Length: 339
Image (cartoon, rainbow, N blue to C red; front, side, top):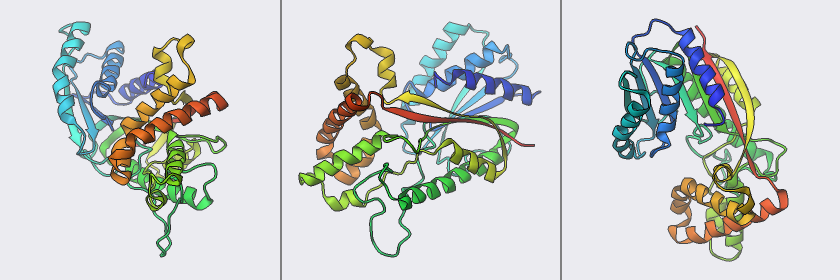
């Protein structure tokens, strides 16, 4: 989000230029998660509107934070008073009215009334699919034997199954948002994407390698690994473009890719002189454990999680020594709803 600040600012200002004479601005963050990071988006849009000299005293701002029903919205609610206080200390009492709402629900479907929202934002959420892709064979056979995600050695049928599920989900997302977005409204979306030529696009590929090793040692059942597929897909920029153009409700403004290290936040916080592959591997393991452990523990059991991510950290460190860089390819797109 910090690296995309310029794109974000340009599109918020464009939205304000497209739509005039509004009595209230309505903005939604889809896939907000919980904790302090949920307020990064809120803070950014408040600062952008303030810098654009929008009088929030006359035009209140309503911000809707969306995530699945199981999200910890109570943590967000508890942080709201502190956030309001920090804004008023920074901007002063004349800054204006900002109202924060929670909107639980699945963004692969409707969330808001027709022609209601002015600006949608989603960061690092839309690569999650509504479900893992399924094999279309009548025979009970694994889609992606020995892996939990697409790898450079996966057969074309695996890629095709994942792409088919992504196209279905993303098209439903776009159709739903087109009904909810005001004409001239804008969306800015960031995905964890993919480059077809890269050997490693996503840490999930390394998770599969570790689980394979644990199968060989009898620590994980082979059948469980063979029939488990993570419900995520990193699209290429061209795949994103094709779905948007086929759906037909939006005009693409920005479509670009950018690289960011698997351990990017660590690089920001730690002196390069003490940053080694072991530390980077451990950091990547912690961040991936926070994301994937709830899913993996259901399938493979809680008892192996410590060992799984310990091995993952060591293997990532080894890959860093061999490849020097392990990076996500982020796909960033902004679209405007057609009249």
